[in-house]
Image (cartoon, rainbow, N blue to C red):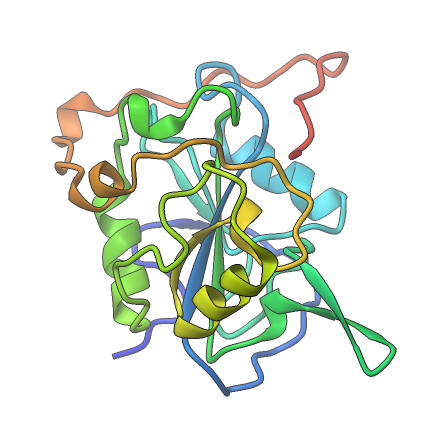
Length: 211
C-alpha cells in the first residue's frame, strides 16, 4: 500500500509542486541542510526550505528523531537536484521516475550524519520501502566523488538511494561521506532515547544553506 504521507511525521504545507511522471525506477535522494542538529529543529529547517521555494519531502533531525513532511510522495521536490540539457531544455532529474523522494537531514556535509545517532530512521526507511525504493546505492556510497558522468547516469537509471552529489548534473557537496551500510542497518531507537527538538532560534540567527 502506498501512503503519500509518512505515518507519524508532522505535516506542513510545502506549496505547489509538480506531480510525478509515473515512468521509471523509484528513487530516494539524501541531502543535508548545512546546519547542526543540536541547534536547529527539523520543523525550522523545513519551514526555511518552504520559504526559499525549495521544499523537499522529508526533513529529519537524526539527533532528536523529529521528522517533518512538506510534500506528498505524489509530488516532486521543489529543490533542484541535478539538471541535464535535453533538446535545449534543462531537465531536472528529480522529475524522473515513478517517485523521487528527497530527504533533507539536519546536518553538515563535513560531519556525516551516519557517524552519529540516527534516531527516527527506521520509519523513514519503512516509508521509502513502501514506495518500492530498493535499499541499494547504485552509484556507491555518497561523498566519494570522482565518478564519471556516464557512470552516474547509468546508476541513476537503476533506481535506489542516492546522495545529492550523485544526481547527474548536480553541483551539491552534500550529503557528505555517508556510511551507506550503517544507514540501512541503523537500530530503532527507544522512545525514551529521543531528545526534544532544539529551542526556537532568535530572529537574528540564521541557519546555513544547503550546499
